[in-house]
Amino acid sequence: MSTLLSTTDMLKLRTLQEILPTFASSPLTFQVLCTLPHPTPPPPQSLQILYILDSSFNPPTRAHFRICTSALHDDRPSSVPKRLLLLLATQNADKAPKPAAFEQRLAMMGTFAEELVEALMASANGEYKEGELIVDVGVTKEARFVDKARVLEDYKDYHHEGKPVEQVHLTGFDTLIRLLDTKYYPPQHNLEPLTGLFKKHRVRATRRTDDEWGGREEQDGYLKRIANGDRENEGARKGWVDRIELVEGRKEGEEVVSSTKVREAAKGKDEGQLRTLVTDKVAKWIIQENLYLE
Image 1 (cartoon, rainbow, N blue to C red):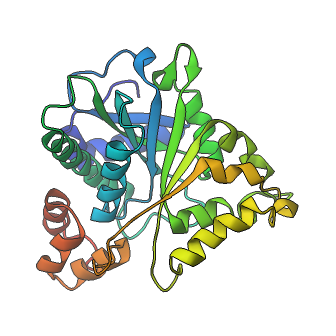
Image 2 (spheres, helix red, strand yellow; image 1 turned 30 degrees about the vertical axis):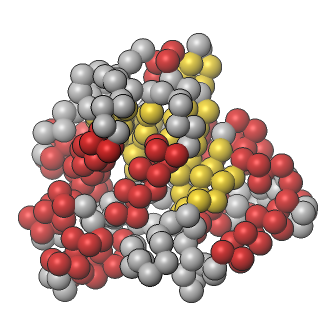
């Protein structure tokens, strides 16, 4: 499991089908499968911050694309290298591996990573020197954010001067709600297990201002209740809000992008709608592999 795959290998389903059982039966809880762009990244001691987009990627969407590009452009702009991990959990606290199999999702993550690097390099106008922009595609057996953060702290490539670098977890507002939901932290069912995560790391949550998640006031109010101590009885600390940043998502009037909408467009064979929701290469893969038709 120590050999990184090339981007070409990431598009070979048989290769991925062989690797996933090997990973599942190994003692490893995290593995990087592919790193872009080639050649190899710079020495790990130069790394300061690791950005992590942990998702089911079922499939990767333009909303995921916006979350990544926004973070790499706007968060700590002077900090280089920029390193992003696209992380797929092979055990999910909420979701079974359907409708797309894990190997299909990893293939889409590989091509999505290619498009992401191409777009970031193009928009930077030569700003990135060799090795200053790195995107990893990885898998983990851990289901909860707090456990994923812990195993990433143990990964030596994500260390600086022998210590784990700061992690910035990129989420949507809906995922932030789940992160701070006591039902995921048995047996006490309080938020005490998150203390270490917020002491060392940050969360950058993109607003989802739609009917299900409320508007700006409701989402700001959610963090204010934590800052005011209203959830201290659940184990939340007031200071956590200093480690959580809410950032803008889609602009007023822009279409809501979700994986559910992508799957509906694919099922309806609406290629035009599909291409508004996912990047070009991901759309091509979905069509080529006849994904989400059932």
